[in-house]
Image (cartoon, rainbow, N blue to C red; front, side, top):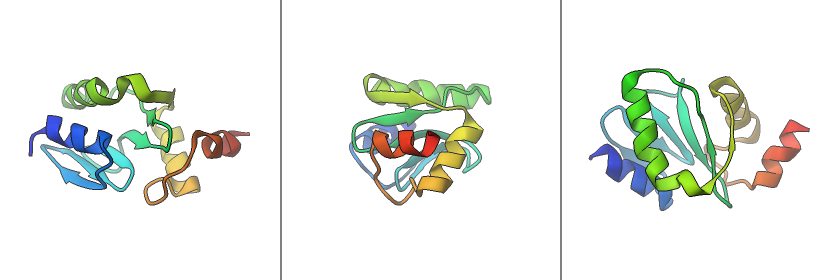
Length: 105
């Protein structure tokens, strides 16, 4: 599957999809592996990882942002985003932005 199709499927709610080194597991879209979550789906929109990793990951980010860009609610660097994913079980549970804010306080 093309990465643009993976990004579109993620946008529309797919919980499983795979392209060229980019894949969806649950509510998370990854580049190359679980060490680099690019985006997290929430009820109202998306959390975004603005960190740079490699040229190919930047290409993945550009592709994904073309679908979700207007619905990004907040940005978190990689390590903070991973903590939120673990602490709130964001991979398996669709949460709200209020849940995320509550975790940060």
